[in-house]
Image (cartoon, rainbow, N blue to C red; front, side, top):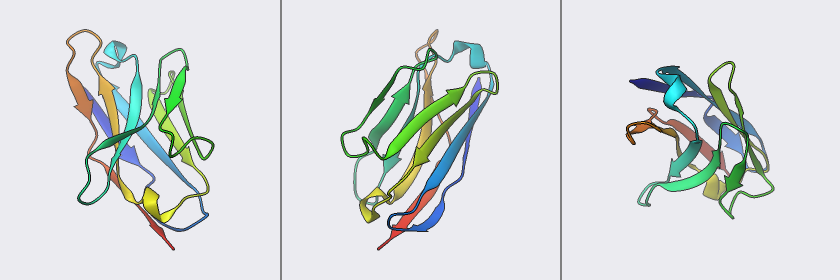
Length: 117
């Protein structure tokens, strides 16, 4: 089993910044790629960014140049630095990590990010 716990969400004005964290515990050795997803009210959950254990990244077009994903493998923690936030970034942000052995998807409980205009 793997547990993922997000933190760092909150309310911020447009143009502001937030940093999300996702701490993994349990069988963390099965985790390779980790990612951030978000879900706005009435919309489907969408990928925001992903990062491999080696540090390769990819981003949704809507956040490129504004968000930066990173991870500290020694601390089993992943981060999402969000700059130049826009009201359309408002959503619940979820940490995701697929189990490379079993294929099972692990999800955190989510953290709310609200950007006011």
